[in-house]
Length: 108
Image (cartoon, rainbow, N blue to C red; front, side, top):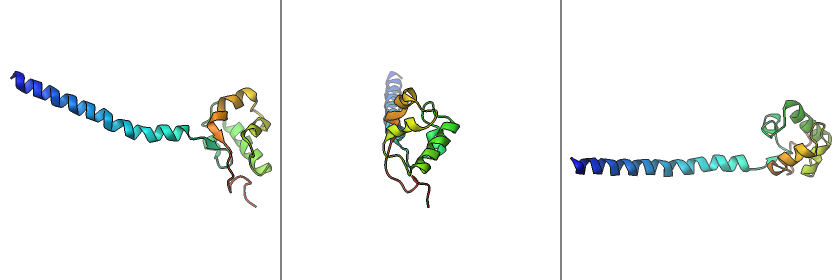
């Protein structure tokens, strides 16, 4: 009886350990995706709203600025958008990037 119990516990331990090892790699891509900077020249209003302190109105202003100025040349230009001051910018600067995009100018 002790041998069966020992074997069962050992098997259970292996299964539990194996489950956590398998689950860990599946979580990694989601974590990497969250850390990828958001391209200001391609982001949608919904994507911009995921940034800390950015609500719908400010996200819309960011898009308006992007269209009016043919895209962002540098992330610091965010501070030219009404509603984003230095404090707000410092919270999100590591979460955004600037890369050229066809969406930047809003089309012809």
